[in-house]
Length: 110
Image (tube, rainbow, N blue to C red; front, side, top):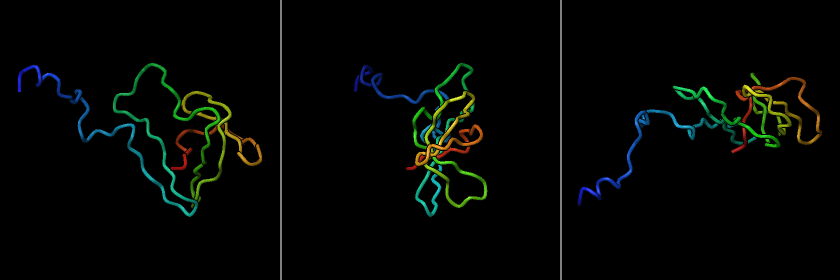
């Protein structure tokens, strides 16, 4: 192997250790209604500039409330308010949720 061949190998960028969590890491939640997962966008050194919201307009989501065995929904995101807050409405009836919802409470079906 020449020195040129060695330079063509893929490298692991600094700070990208195997122990670090990537944005693809997620925890599956098994319920009677199926399998759900949360999207993860937590980094050790978050960016100071604006980033894309975790969930987008017209995306189908489910609402996980404390004490519920299965998430409620499906809901549709009708507004992205910023700071990972959303306005949602029930997909079936179109009834808007009475308060804005944090991304921490939202799940997508996997």
